[in-house]
Length: 591
Image 1: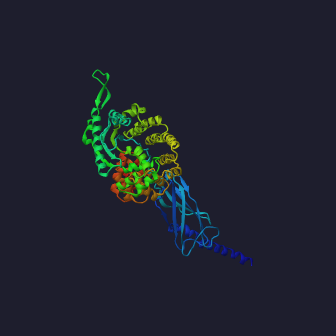
Image 2: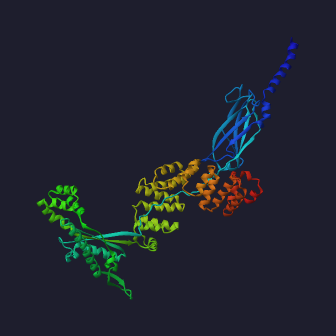
Image 3: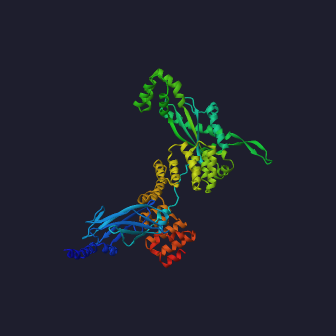
């Protein structure tokens, strides 16, 4: 018995060895290359400061041992030599112990893996490897490269945010108007001397005096002449026409004789007073236009309505009931006491000619305003100062003008806002933030200011804050949507970025289309932008690379590097050109 038992031990040992050999572990290690991996996207891509890693592993039939347990760890191998192990996943055979996703032996199977990792610059030329361990015996599978990466084209975004300058209300020409009246005696059309020296006429002449001194351009005189509606229709029509003629004649004669006293410098440089006539066109017949004449029922109704005359409701009732002139007057004259009040208080005010003089006041010239904005800004109105800022393309000069406006008109939000605008254009974001805060204090929740505060927030890296400001900037203009599109680029919302920037042909609107997989649309936008900068040439090279236009890529890369030599190094680590990394022409272009 003992001998028999002793002999049986080797047999059992051999059986155990056979079982170990048949468990399939060694075969898995040997056939690891049969596992197929697909990575989307490949190369990897920075998407809103993070890189999404999406892997599908395809395990063939008869590969995954029934009792096998495998820990798979995707790993990023950085361009600087460091590695980043991503989250691990456990896989188990159908009869294995422990937790994990099952993979069947007979039919094999697919395993999907997704994670995200924060982007860092060494990722620009990294690679994605698969490292796996057979945990049953702690054996390592051969490391396998499954993807290249990482494309970081979104980082090319330019700070071309649309800061909004508040508009001025400056007018080069201001319409001016003055009116006077000449009143007539009942049934007469002659102008009484007293009417030409009335207080109303004196003020009219003062307007002409002032306009002459200030260089007004006289546009014309309109005359409306009326008769009170208490006479016969035909007589009143002729009477109103005659009153228009006599009013014109009287005013023309007045302007013929009118002199303006002005100060002039004589040949010796001394100031002396001189009387000069007013513009001769004011006394010319063709300068006058008769507009309306006739009986003034509308004026009559208005005066009655605003009066305290007894029976005025009856009078107004007659006006609404009858349209015929004779019927109206018959009914009104039948109200004896009431008509007496009308004759004394209302009707005399309707026997008149109205003289309306239109003019244009010219502003200072652009040259004068520009000069004064620098030398004597306190002599200009706020509208003139804000307008002066639009007359120069020198951003430092703009800032000087807007700062002067801010000093002289501290309660006008536009001055602080526009100073902030100029500061942003000069990359002085901290200074701009203070001015925009002041503008917000003076005009809380103003959409223009909210937009500008949003730009400052984005420049400081506060994208959520920027979007919050933009949400309150509705109505400020199309600039708001564009600025939101820049945040969309940075957060990886490329389709939204394309929509938001669609109203502009800029580098960034083209970049959004590249990132949204529309290289042809990007080319059209970039060409329309007429942007000839180094970065625009570099983006054109990327577009050509994506459309397999090698010649175009090389040409644009050379143009970009010629304008900015640092872009040669950028191209060396840019996975947009990964498939050309061993190309002789590409290597020559980036040397």
